[in-house]
Image 1 (cartoon, rainbow, N blue to C red):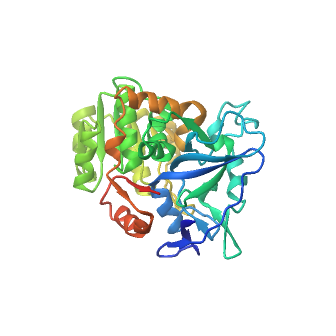
Image 2 (cartoon, rainbow, N blue to C red; image 1 turned 180 degrees about the horizontal axis):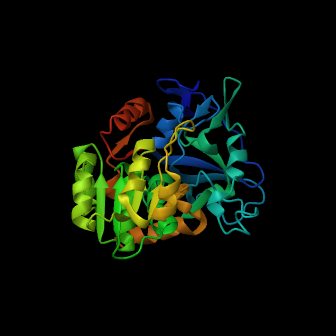
Image 3 (cartoon, one colour; image 1 turned 30 degrees about the vertical axis):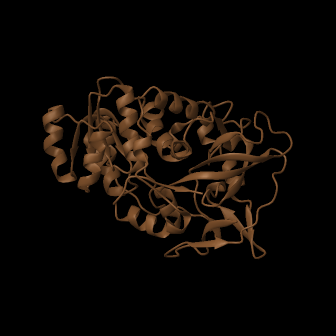
Length: 359
């Protein structure tokens, strides 16, 4: 079968190969035929080395498809079921899943990621984040294949697997945005747009989008931003909307130390800055010891939108059905797998919000 392969860390481009082989699902696993899979910035981050991933690896982690085979001891799934791939599924047994009630922090996915998923010419090949959705099939632990109704479009379902859940979840789960509050979002790609939609669902009164790209600012308004500005214009708008006090919530959806610090600076005393973007491990930003005490600001990370995929995927679908989330409009372009390098280049240049590969 075909797949988009990164042979070596730091490669400039992916190689679309034909000849991948995959086995049958073992106990607790299912095989999924991928129908649609999103092009997420995290895939680009693996390619450029921001997110470490052992090569050779099939990229892609945001997908949806149909179960084609079921291993032993798999509850609740059968051949023919439509599923969303959850690249970081909870095992349901560890302390994070049970005692701490934080299933999104379960680290079982690290074990899945460390197991080769495919072979190519006799060489083991991994799947990104244990998923590898830029191939025609993948094998997942059953907890990472979340059943959905057959009438949910696969293009929409694929985005729920990462960008939508990460962004909406950051607003409704991590920050728990309060109705009537003020919000600023740095970065208006797929995740940032999803944060904006999540803040709107929560009832935020002001939602300010910040980006360098005019088209993205216009797009942000269509998805619920009440204001949209470039970074140099934020201070004046902040003074106008908050009297200079700062926003109640700021979300950073870029992964840059500069914008992480800007998000912290943009919130009021006692406000919350939520870091959603993935930065490089060696990059840092500074906070003074006094300002942390005096401002009582909250600086938190948001991993996968603090999501319990077992219930939150269904909640996202209900919100979509109710017209509260516009997910179809987030699919700005559908492409073939062979166009993946051009699609990644377009994402790096900031030209599009969201692209979906159909397989």
